[in-house]
Length: 59
Image (cartoon, rainbow, N blue to C red):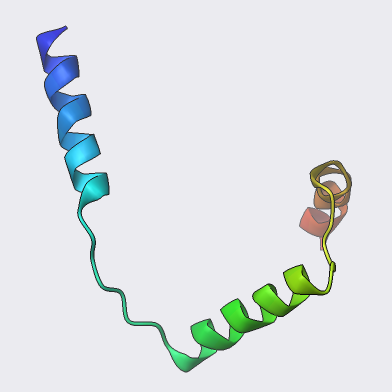
């Protein structure tokens, strides 16, 4: 039990640390496009996405 508490504390400390990540121009473009899709309401409900997933995996 003690090990579990220590491990959980370590995980929490790691998640609190901030690290700077440099994005490529392509990654920035993808994030910008995603943000535009969200703002425009171009979203797919999770249930629909799950239904499409098996089809997508076949290709």
